[in-house]
Length: 435
Image (cartoon, rainbow, N blue to C red; front, top):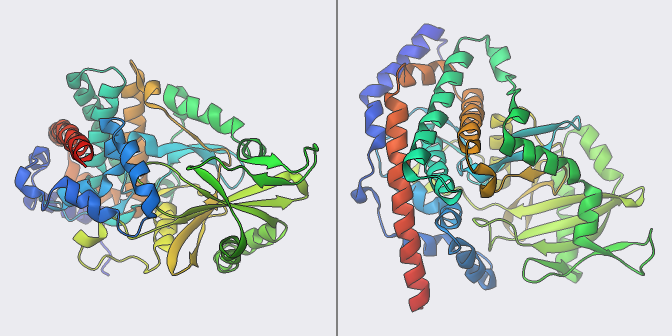
């Protein structure tokens, strides 16, 4: 590939405005949807655990935002039907306000960043911004904001994104690649998640997820059964889950392989997580190090293809979807889970990561009042950093340019898509009642 100067890369971004003018991003045509949302949702249920499909629908029916969380495949189809820039970055893929959170970095420090990459894939950068914009409007309304003020918050989000992209484009490449957002603790929702993460230790998970066998203080532990969200797995199924750790370990760095070898698998459970992931196979493995009070919990989570994959021509991604998620996460995050890896189980692809190791997330109630705007600004910075790490801040800068036109357009889109989501939610409620 020919080396290009920063000025030449900026011009490449400016040229992309001829494909899609920045003001065009505000448009949302009904004709862009290839089929009904109900049909798209039904299609996305293929291959899931049949008895959990109804639970996923129940969680989506709780609110428009709950619907939005479970309807990434619907939005992927909608976005693919619109004109797009062709400026690719590694997408989070499911960018919404609750898919950012706190977790422990390899050195033990707590960090706050994008933390859900099930749908990650290289795709037009603006798709992440449009999904986050719609989520901010929906979350804003759910947390007591009027529609107009929630839409104004989207402009704050995009302005923050644009500002950091411009800043990163002017830095030396190595410095931009390691850029840290330092004011996280000044943003109340993020600070709350950090405090939650401080308490969310493996020992806390031991209390929450397991019971002592025999009742003694230092007794062995087994997973609780709390159907339908948690059930112990035994016999052949449990042995297969534990056996999958062998191929997983091969993908870890040597020092992580050594650390993992110090732990002994003790018990296995099936756990239901999130909204979009309900119905996928998700296992937890409880391991012990130097005794029952030295736990490690690993999550072995099924990863089907990204919901964007059908709409991209020959995406440059690994065939293994667990590996796709790992590589996408590493591309966007400065610090990643040291036990991040992938494996196979019964012909399906799985991601492996730590479960409940200093993890914390926000609630919609955390976004009341001025907190929504402050949090939106932080979302813009974190997405800008992730996209700049995985693509080219200079090219993005060239496209985004100066002024508020792009932010105004994304705000219009966020409002329009939130309204579409409300209608889709109503349609789902009617369809489930009529069933």
